[in-house]
Length: 188
Image (cartoon, rainbow, N blue to C red):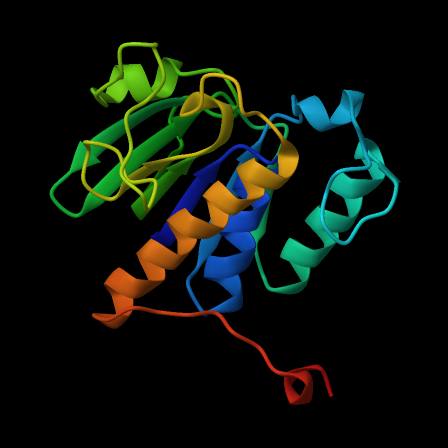
C-alpha cells in the first residue's frame, strides 16, 4: 500500500509528490499527461526567468523521480473509494488492478469529476471546497490547483497548493507541524 497517491502530474501533483516522497512516504503519481503546462511558457514563476512548459514538466518529473516517486505515466484513475484504512483507486490500465493509499491528492486541473464522485463538498462557484491545508470534506483527501480555484490557475499557485497538501499530510504523520526546510549543508 502506498502512503500517498497523487492523481495528476502537473505542478500541483508533482509538488505534492516531491514533498511526500522526499520525506519518506511511499508516493505514487498517476499522470495522463494532460497538463496545461504543454501549452505554457513560464515567465512569472519565481526562480525561473523563462522556461517552456514542456521543459518544466520534464525537469519536475526528474526531480520527483530522484526522490523515489513511482510514476504511472499515461495511466488514468477511473475511480476512488474511501475505505476504513484510506482509499482504493482503480485505473484504466487494468480493470482488476487496485491501488491502496492512506492519502489521496487530487491534482486534475479543472476536472472535478473524481472529487464529485467521492462526495467532496463544492462551493457555490462549483470549485471543490477545501480548508487552508487543501483538505476536502473527505478526510485525508486533498484537492489542489484549478479544481479549488475559480480563476487563479497559475502554475506557481498550483505548485503551492500541492506543497500545502503535502505538508499537511506530513504534519499528520508526525503528529505535529512539519516543515520541509533544508539548509545549504543538505546540498553538500
